[in-house]
Length: 131
Image (cartoon, rainbow, N blue to C red; front, side, top):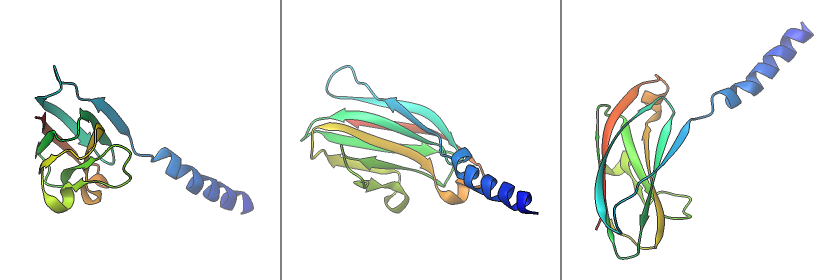
């Protein structure tokens, strides 16, 4: 009995490690300091894709997500920030703002928990522009 309890405890401790979210980072590069790209991709379950976008203070960043799954969104994070400056799940799938700081911004594409726990997939096109 004791060995069964120890095995159950060991399994419960190992499960979070096995269930870690997959995070993929993809740099977005333009021909110069400005440009636009349409990026096709997919996320499944708890996986996320982080697109890193270099920008200078005063430039305008625009991002639009077209997705096959209504539970798929994106966030935009400023360089070094712990919280999103734009949260798609509360604001929608379009973002446009003047960049406050020079550096690398992160556009994170993800599925909401309701879809992620069902291991759903979202095929998407992410339009990213810097002007």
